[in-house]
Length: 264
Ligand code: 48H
Image (cartoon, rainbow, N blue to C red; front, side, top):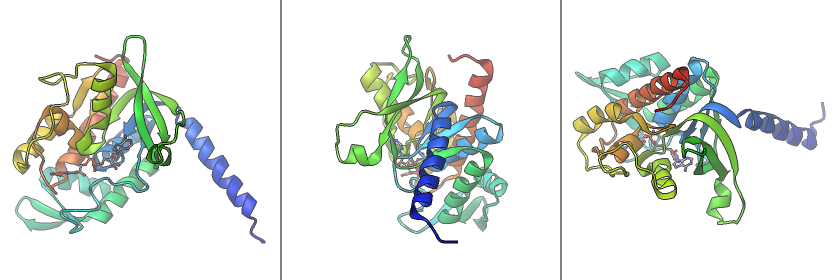
């Protein structure tokens, strides 16, 4: 067979366009393909929930590939290890209650298993705004190519509709900040705003993370490091069990909202 360049181009354009069209109206739209966003996508897709992630970077994984200070290892506690077992990611006991995993094996497996479960992940797409209805409820995301944003080109975005939006953008909690800034809305935090993450305290940070994983504004959930940033809880360094547990909880809360067919 003689390889034809135009056939290659058509295969890429047609296949991508088909998938992108399928992502225009979904159950759950997630901003950010870090560990919490991909864990949430996996558990949702496994339940048959139509789920899409938009990731602004070229690569997925957020802060996980970098491990702790570029030593590409992560630590998880027992509850986190149970999730890694479920994903078939190998862990080694370091000492009682502390398990170590390869950050690259972990993140590539999270990515692969969430896609194989049915979630769609689009990289190089920046979530630059949310879409709202007449009652200011969030009902979708506004997207643009990361390259467009980086080049500061004046190009209008496209929108997608979703029943639930999850902010999984990490430390910056970008989606929550957009909601406060552009809708002038009060979040369900003590101040009504993004409180901002506190300094390192791994134990308190990990404990707060799952509790902070919830609906923060009608139609908007927060997961992962964004949850601690929004609710003003400590960072925790390179222990990642909480990120996985938070993603799992975000999936459960989203599913509950979708099943009830109403948002608080
Ligand atoms: C599209 C976006 C946008 C946007 C950002 O930072 P992440 O890895 O987030 P988590 O919460 O899943 O994991 C946090 C963890 O990596 C971490 O930082 C820890 C444990 N820190 C502890 C400490 O003490 O420092 O991933 C977020 C992802 C990234 O890939 C971003 O590129 C992406 O979200 N993102 N994608 N549109 N507007 N903003």
